[in-house]
Amino acid sequence: MESENVMLKRLLMLLLILVLSTTTFLATIAQSQEQYYYIQTSSPQYSIVPGSEFVEPLNTSQPLYIAVLLNFTNLPSLQSYLNETYLQASHFHKWLTPSQFREYYYPSKSYVNSLISYLKSYNLEFLGNYGLILVFNGTVGSVENAFHTYINVYYYPFKNLYWFGLLGIKDIGPFYYYSNNVTPSLPYNVGKYVLGVVGIDSLDPKVVNVIKQAWHLDMVKAQSGLVSKAIISPMTIGKYFNFTMAYEHDYNGNGSNIAIEGVPESFINVSDIYLFWQLYGIPRTGHLNVIYFGNVTTGGQSGENELDAEWSGAFAPAADITIVFSNGYVSGPQLVGNLLNYYYEYYYMVNYINPNVISISVTVPESFLAAYYPAMLYMIHNIMMQAAAEGISVLAASGDWGFESDHPPPNFHIGTYNTIWYPESDPYVTSVGGVFLNASSNGSIVEISGWDYSTGGNSVVYPAQSYEITSLIPFTPTVVRTYPDIAFVSAGGYNIPEFGFGLPLVFNGQLFVWYGTSGAAPMTAAMVSLAGTRLGALNFALYHISYQGIIESPLGNFVGKVAWIPITSGNNPFPAHYGWNYVTGPGTYNAYAMVYDLLLYSGLI
Image (cartoon, rainbow, N blue to C red):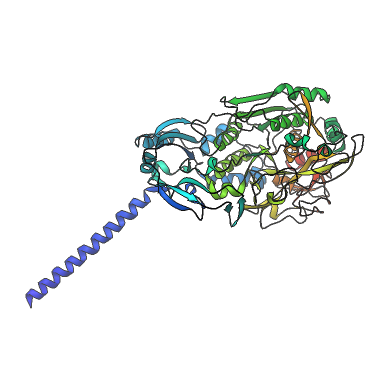
């Protein structure tokens, strides 16, 4: 009996030891898991395209360039700061300087150095720091070991690419690509501010170059009937939309700087811009500056950016204009096309130019980024938050392809479907839609309507914003973030269809004609710059200026001028109508009245 008791005690002791050992083992696993940071945005919804077939592991000795994308620190605090800056009277429009923002929200140098040291310990060669982008070169094996992941080769056997259950790009398959199949991770202390890793898959640029510019000059000669016999000049537009009255009240852009997003790896001929201003008698007193990083100009001469500078300078004669090109500056191969260079231009603008206004006509499909490269979307979103904190107004062309890009003009094909554009859809960006000018035979404006190819639509990323939910504009949607937020001249002419050409541009020393919301964005940026001060993210103000001129500001309610011009005709194919619509948003504007109301909203009048 005694021996049985001893055996029972021993058995109980053994079970207790097993329980304690198991508990300790599980605790060790849990502790180990807590010490690692999983980089979720580098395993996006479609990192492995649905329907793909596994082929083989990628050769571990193959060279691989990667870019590690860094996040801001203390994002909840930043969001709280922005809410106070835009919604509370006590902190209303108290902007940060770029150096203050970096001090409060950028990862420290010691953190960045520790991350670099960690990755170098896995034989990854550090190539450079490009504004929250750390670029490395190594082998597939070294990347897999450093990030605890595996990279495989896959085959996509279908013709079309889909995202969010809808057609995205037609006729691009079948194709091979490589991608990671395990979420990358790093030790927590070096990984906690890593937003994403790009270069560990090859979907872009092998499949599609996602950066688009809305410029159509190469199609002008295709059908002579598309070219207007009467050209609508900047002076005619300025008078019709009351820019001239703004100048009479000394709103001319003096003290403002408009920064223009350049087409990466391109260049401009500044003599074209000066010739345009000379041709139309623009009394320019502001300066034109062009900044190039790197010398890769394979994108060619950018008519898009010459258009941006010519027309923004025409409507804001005293404002400085700065165009930024990042041309192969972010080292290594293209990784995600030239998206890293695209991002770097924004980074440089908000940190070292600190303009009043940024104008964007070069854009990326929102749903493509959300599905395949969310880290790049969040990187750009962070910069838009920084711009908002510094009081920079960001305006972007809504696109020239109709509702959610599925209704392009007959003479243009973009090949990307079921998407609106980014950063246009960002909550801190004002998306500029289009209006069409019907001209007489002498080039005077007879009437205006919504431009039928102005892109509008619904975000798949962002919910409805506070300014949309509390909007004074009738019929503003309140389910998700929608755009456009304002509209201006995108096409026009005499006796031509709405996808015809009747607006001038000097390119290569010759006069061309164009259409596109890519012109509406810089013209509207010019209107905003006339205020000569910082107005910040405009949507908070625009949606709280009523059609009757009643203004609701955190500083109080005011009676301003009637700035909005509602647009009730035009289709994309959704019809323009009184109130918010997918063609023009709230509508277009009287420039003098809108500048006045924006200043009144900001407490500056």
